[in-house]
Image (cartoon, rainbow, N blue to C red; front, side):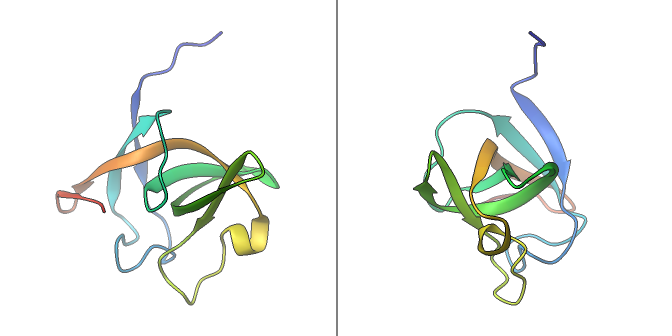
Length: 102
């Protein structure tokens, strides 16, 4: 079994989380832990396991999470790809501006 660090960084790409996050924002993520509705998470869709995404957790469903972006014009989320498995919860945006996500 491969050991993994509990914290990792991701870079936002695309407009799906506007206005909370913008393309180019760098995020610090805590691997595992408890996910609650409303959390901003990093996840993989079961139907697209090669795609790592940043979205908002909406509800638990079918042993995973229904996740959606904050931008209502972009539907590259559970509406298109179904349930996702959460890898971790976003703790902070550290670049270009520091801030907690809510």
